[in-house]
Length: 257
Image (cartoon, rainbow, N blue to C red; front, top):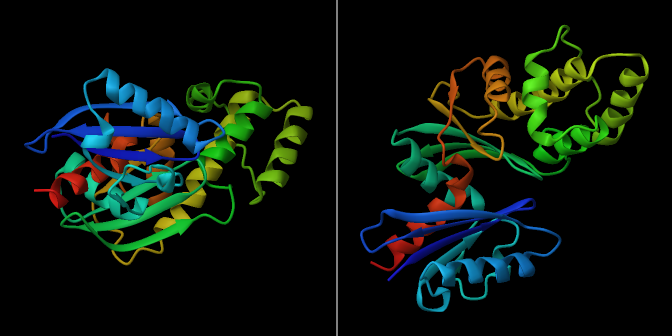
C-alpha cells in the first residue's frame, strides 16, 4: 500500500509518496501548465512508472488544483497540509512557517502538526512568486538568476509600488534611468520580503523558530532578505518545496492506518 500526497499549485505540481511505515519513498515535481487536469495526467503516468497505482493507493490532494484529483480520498487545504508537512521536515514544535507560493503567501503557526494561527495574502500578486516571475521577465533574466543578481547590487534601490502592474512600470522607469539589473533585482526581492514581513507580523507568536517553504526555499539571498525584514533567523530544508505534498501524504497515511 502506498500513500500519495498531491499538491497542485498555480506554478508547479508536487507529489510525495510514502510507504507502509510512513516514510517518504520518493517525490517529484512537474510544471502545472495551464490545466490542473493535464498536470494530473502527467502525475498519474509518473506514479505508474514508479510502481505506484494511484487508483489503488490512499491519496490526499491539496493546492489550487486539488479538486481535479478524482481518485483522492480527501481534498484538504494547503494550510493544513503545510502544517503537517512542516512538522515532519523540521522536527521542531512549535514553529512558524512562511510559504511563498506562485499566487499567494501564507504565514502559519504550527503546534503538534496542526494549525494554530495563519494569515494568507491571496488578493494581490505582490509579495508572491508571480510578482518575482513578472519582474524577472521584465528584466529579461531567468527567474533563478535574480538571487545572484541581487546579491551583487551596489545600491539598495527600493521598489515602492505595492501593485504588481505599477511596480512593473516602476522597473521599466528605473531601467530607462540606467539603474543596473543588480540594483533593480535587489529592489524586487526586497519588495517581496517586505510584503512577507507584513503578513508575518500578524501572527500572535512571531518569536518561534521560522522556516521557509515553497519554490523560493533554495534562494539563499532571498532568505537573508526575509530574515532581515522579519527580524528572525530563517532556515529551510532541501525538500521544503514539497512541504504540502509531504503533509498530504502523511495525512493519507494517518487516515488509513
